[in-house]
Amino acid sequence: MKLEKTFVWDMAEHINTKEDVTAYLEAALEENDTALLLAAIGDIARSKGMAQIAKELNLARESLYRSLSQDGNPSFDTVAKVLDNLGFQLSVRQKQQMDFSMKRGFLPVQLSECFKCYSLTDDKDLLNLSYPGFKVQNIF
Image (tube, rainbow, N blue to C red):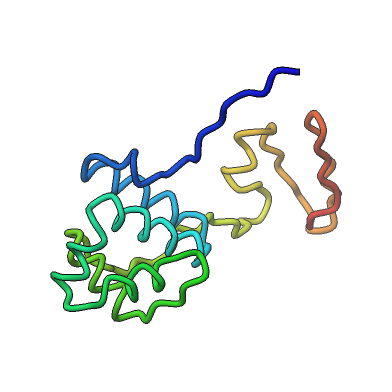
């Protein structure tokens, strides 16, 4: 059996533009996983040059590497400073939530896109919808 040659993937080698950084940070944030977000920030910092960032932030390079490593646990202050150094800032916005509030007699628009919209006349009506591999019953 012939062995294939493999290479170590390093995301830092593939981050070349601000658009790459933005897309990577947004993707990491969407996962709602702190470890993934910190790993992404570490990859981005390595792509710019961890030594340069550490120098600009008056931090020890080794300490910054350790903080942004997979096992690291950086302070919020460190994360904010690194993001600022990379040209980004943290902001907060309210999550977009799907509106599943029921108006008497109609399914929410989100469900009606998959199914015919059913009009119900009584709260005790039984809703029985089916879709390939999906069945909804008695949701009222």
